[in-house]
Image 1 (cartoon, helix red, strand yellow):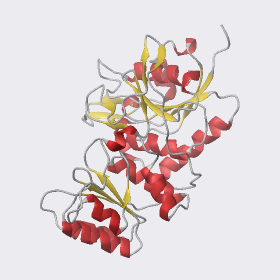
Image 2 (cartoon, helix red, strand yellow):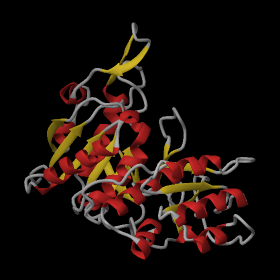
Image 3 (cartoon, one colour):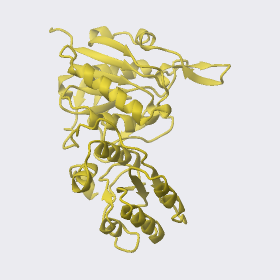
Image 4 (cartoon, one colour):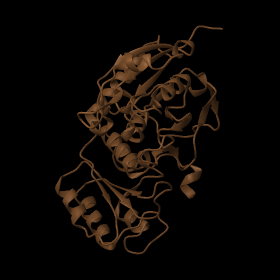
Length: 336
């Protein structure tokens, strides 16, 4: 048996680091990396783990500045030839956004695995140790070299650009709703079920552009919310449209005002899977948004489209280059 692969494991907080405080009335950050590792026996048989503490911040508190800082930490650790891969441990609230941001910001073929927990360390069904063990197993596998950033919880391996938190509290909440999971961890073994396929390549952004508000189309809403967003002088706007990219004519008119003001507008679907598209040409239909100059988000959800827009703008992309980056390469799900 050869030498174990060396992994950097970066601890940033989240539910995996929390215990119930009866005075506070709920779970609060308490455990550092060493304490979490002490609750996770057997790692030394999987990989040579190097633990790095990077705060204990709930994922709901993260900012774009935090994401950029973590990306630089990850890049530095992976640039060290001694490290064969990396695990990022964080809160699950925003994993679907932060993992995707890392996928676009960090250019390395080495495995990068993001994990966390849905139960705190005081719970009898605390899932942190199992998730961490599976994440280390995945990051130590050469099968994931070149796969980009993946999310591992509940023994599944999910691609960062598709993974979605589908339930607020379920252990198996993370699913890839367009093309499905990449694989699973089965009895301590990585099983790859499909290739990652084409993905957006990192574009060398040094920061994420902001602010980028999301405006969600709903029944009976007028244009006031989108007009208010224009008043913020944002870096861009994401419109989470109904169905396959449709809104009211009033919302389209406000979108046209944003585009006329030089604000990039991305059209996504508010549905959890499937693309916004140009199949409808009535006023406010997806085709009319694209004719007005909006960009399509491919199968990205609105929060992920916001990340792609922020990274693309931060890298200096504009016009057609930005639109191609946000939309991403075509996939079979784009025609679904």
